[in-house]
Length: 431
Ligand code: S3P
Image (cartoon, rainbow, N blue to C red; front, top):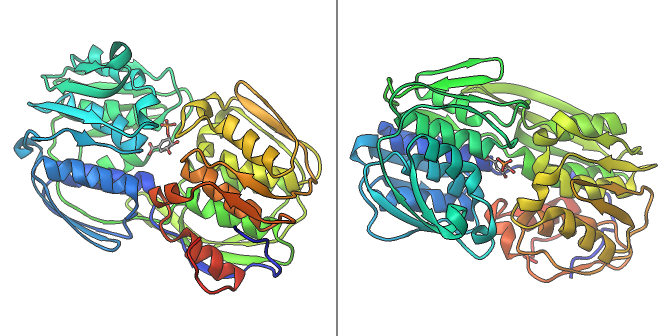
């Protein structure tokens, strides 16, 4: 049982490394000849799946807490894995690796857990098939498990029909192995970590407005990488600080890439008191310390181009909205239905179980403000962001929150409860 807090939240937290950037650092380091050193790597379950996949392809990867060293002979020396690759719960591993494996000269089989096995892969399979990729999966090559017969790919000009950085990245990685030029056009900008990192590793990549073009002309060279803190993880403590009266918390070295900071724009519009200090940029990625204070907020509308900039934060924004004055309306967020779980349904179930009222619709929800949360038992749907949202909600409930399982939190924030107890001023006792 997670109990409500009696005290304001105080202190400073070192947010773990960004999940998206950690995945990409392993992928590009494995394709580059030489030794890449990665600091502040997210040592969580999803990123470890990406590491395992490359180890099976012959790359030497050593991990010591958050420090990783990748020694690779380069993309041309990757070996055919002898065993099926297990991507666990990781959608990012799955989508990005499909693009890459399609262009490597060997046969691979891939699978995931029961949740990943329900998530659509045709969004990557379709465009990469147009590049000559060969996939064999359940439901007309849409679902895992899947076999991939590596082949010679050819470049493509592709307008993204879904606002997805995973799809964009998969095509760019396929493009890195393909003959000729590959151009991806996006109508709304999604997170651009793949582009930033490809450039840092020396790839032939050009970006003109919303068009990204890549070729196979330049080999990647090994780099030193510092992974900023994950704003999607910081989000839970940003909201905690805003909703617990009297709180003031600082989240250190959080990634501030503008394709990811929709949450900061949202809290700004809602009237939050916060500041950002010690801003630095490394390899095209900005980061800094965020301090939030408890604030009286008001509801707003969140939609359109803003959505990809905060897609993973919507569950915790929904909790925030229950405490603001007036209604918050979230729309254009249908992608939430195909995340680790259907996050629109999960948010509705969790907040309702805790005593709140909200309406959901196909691509969003309307959340009433100034609601008292009673607390109670909730299901996490084995979704890390739902489990963390429920845990943060416990702070402001009358009776506390019982979660069926919090194991999924290992996916993106292994020391979440340590940090939660730290800001509560309690001894660390793992929930
Ligand atoms: C991610 C992109 C987003 C996000 C996911 C990580 C990435 O997914 O929700 O958690 O690292 O590229 P989509 O590309 O499906 O929107």
